[in-house]
Image 1: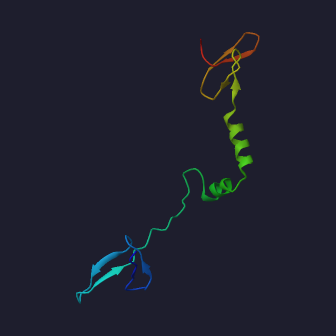
Image 2: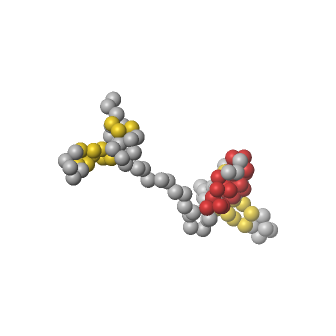
Image 3: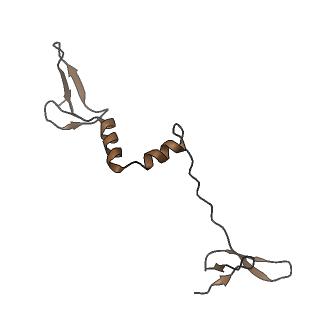
Length: 104
């Protein structure tokens, strides 16, 4: 593997990295390119501090919060799990509520 040296900084430049250019005096030099620095930004509705706090929580705490938010109910007929936004709910006159996974 042929490693060249940067004409400005003297660092090693590996093949495929850096850019060649011609100087005014006619010599060809190879310049080292820099990578973009990653920067973490906040998402709309959540500050960066909130995101970092949630990220640094223990996995068990996050899993418990997720389970609490999902609030899965069971079908009154089959016993299958009914996730939010699915199934049908019927209320009798006496106030008893039934949840059904589907209408069949």
